[in-house]
Length: 624
Image (tube, rainbow, N blue to C red; front, side, top):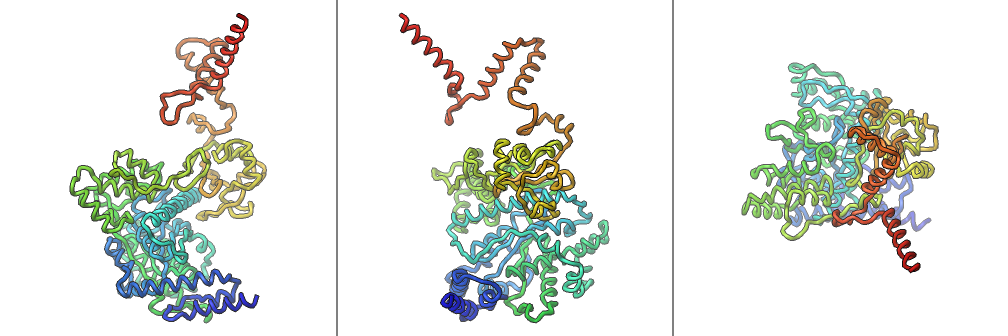
């Protein structure tokens, strides 16, 4: 053990005392004293700092572009909370983290949300840690920015549904961002961590006493009352609740938590979020300065100051902000805005906007954008720039394979050379990825709550049969959204899972949210958000679910044939019904050639009949 400890101390000394390094909020030596850390991890930390020092020197010598200049050139930077020159220097010498937050006030992200994420992804490409934050707690308060009317109260079931769907949309975005990083040749950096967090993780445990002692006691009311949002809502709107008034303080606590735990120093948001970003920076400083324990105080030098900036607001053709409230959202959910429609939205962008959108919504190098615009100007009728823009956006949102399919649907030719495409597993493979995951939100009758866990998994489509559902439950391969331990249901705003067990059917009811929503999962990405409806409503809809009693294929086909005969004024005899049933079954089970659906292969029954016919023929020949 002695050589290992000695090596650890040497590496810790190297991490903490490297020449010219900016001191971190914690050192490798302090980490080693609090818990056991492998020397391989310490070496990765030291190598990361060494790479950053080398990169900082290259930027200073003009050998590498500064990422701030990259963002500015592409048009991402609108309003800056801080001094740009000081921000550039901090970003050069220190690997600061950045975050973008979104409140789940709808069940899907829209194209307006994508714009603040783009500079975050660019920072991650250049080696900075990045956090996408889901506001499971702040969504229950409601951001009053730019609103004259307060947001409607959201029930727990709606918040849980929105949190689940947006969580998996962000997971899909990150998967495609990783693929695009490889496509455009950016190096993978171990120190550039990425996180998908939910602020309900820390705000649900925040006591009123701690909030008041650390933040509220040291915050002045005057500056908060002078904010434009507060004045307009008080004079022109329906007034402001205490929760809405304190919303920027909770957002500031989010900033502080990530600053303290992950080294996040930068917040990015839409241009309407500038006031919240400034208020969050002020709140972070107040909380940091109110620390009473000497050993827990954090440094306050200029290189440790929080900062932020906003991106331009994406507007529709009428000049209105995209969003659910405005009714003009272009959703990133394929079941609300199809990929074909999303592709078409970017295809309809006018020529004078497309170059700006290529800079904002793609990771294409500037030289490649200029080359694309040159091709476009040579023959605008081909709309090469719009096709390129649409393909790149769909590659980010749905993956390159789906983007290529939609491009071909819109008859775009890639000049004889197909773009870089990552193929997703086929549906038959059973492998579910973020890009090929089935629809998550479904409806089922309330009577399914009387089913066993195995049959419930079959009914939701997470299992292929009752026996497959039984295997999943026995192997703990299926999960229900709840607090870990199978004793409590899901805390609203959270997204946590616990394995399904062989419990009695009536025990499933304790995991219902507002008595109508049940969230299940198999694997990492196969999720079902089950909304329960009355049995009468389900029967009236004419839908059936897998394993539903008295809805077998033969029974349903028999009923359909009897209805058709009755409508034609006929009454089928048993032999006629049997013959029609065999014909209808044969039609539905017909085998087609994969690349030519006009060619039909014989069914097993037809092959059997041919063998019998051939057998009789050979017997007759032998008699002769």
